[in-house]
Image (cartoon, rainbow, N blue to C red):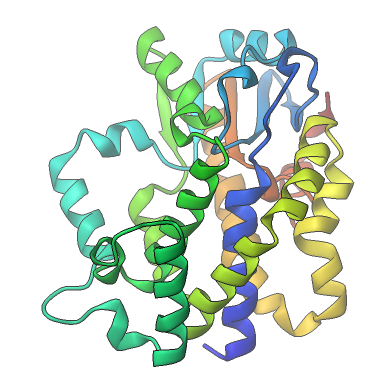
Length: 299
């Protein structure tokens, strides 16, 4: 993968993590990114997910909660609760996430970049052996998660996990659009380990200014602002990055939209939770549903 693509891939993997990190004070009044789609007698509710949050993110506004209660099935990118209870799948995840044999992260990074990683770990008093066995994309995610947790954000309070717990308790069917393994495989295909880790560290240094903008866009339901923050502005400046967008967003959006339509055909009403970046812009899941005859409205 060309260097330019790897750089852009990293930016959007981080955006996926950082995008949905609202501290959510006054959560019941937050609009959130929420849509209703209908075709004939079939209804689809789509909520842009927040993968890390705080306790005061809940309860969400009643319109969202009522839509979940009225739905016949929950549709998610990946059933992370099921993955956590499946030993065989956990083993596969470990194989995708960690180096096998004697190879380590140090072998795939230049001494300069590895030195930057060591410095970052030392500043946060984190043990180097915790990271050295992780493959580059997984290490990138781990570093981001560490930084998010240090800022008080908790992945156990993510919206997708919250509604998955409710669905398991309610006996509501859960439909996966991708699954954890497929998502890991996409990340592992990004390439350019040096650039991935170096840019991860640089992006995390700027997190203090990035989060408020994304938080504001999500809480106010400003899908246009979100689209520009994650996709439009950079794509306008660097059209050569489009192949990466296609890998991480547009191609997946097409697959997700097809999966959502399939779930909708099987259930009168479905409640869909996917990353908010997949719901905004010209090539989004929302636009693909509209192209198939669904009447879609942000609510």
